[in-house]
Length: 193
Image (cartoon, rainbow, N blue to C red; front, side, top):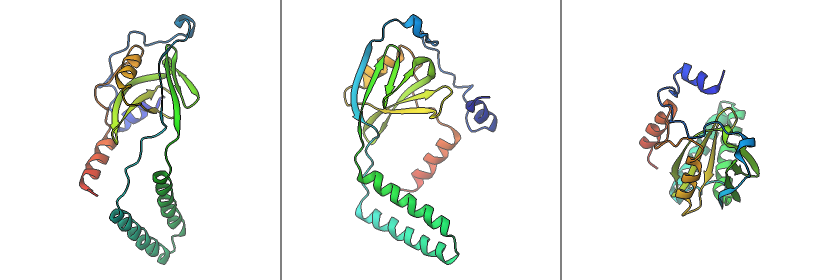
């Protein structure tokens, strides 16, 4: 049983009603593909840059974390204090360190992502989103973890990347959203920092 069948059964996703149109070559065969040729290659950060938090927001979040920590200390929940401190520390580290620049390559055989090569038959549909002003190629994996690859696209390469991937994979015009995605969007829209 596949992961999407389980989430469909639980009602978290609905992949059956939104089946993408199959690509011209939905099943990729390495022997029939011929010589590997590079279609598009670029260098870009591994992740999109995080928005910088303002001084007031940092101060408010620090006060909330301290009050929460004191409350948890009074009730003796030391493990939860450790979890909250870890989340604060990881958030600080991710915002303070710049993302590593990585070489990406789309070929006639597949996609090279962080020194690992994925063949076209390992992928499902793809779509492109914007995150903090940076275009991101989102490619679903068929039966692997991670279930989706997020590849930052260098400025000016968006159309070339879309064209190269569309030769082998179905393209989704809009991002497929599950119940959890919609709930997250609704909650974050209410919490305006």
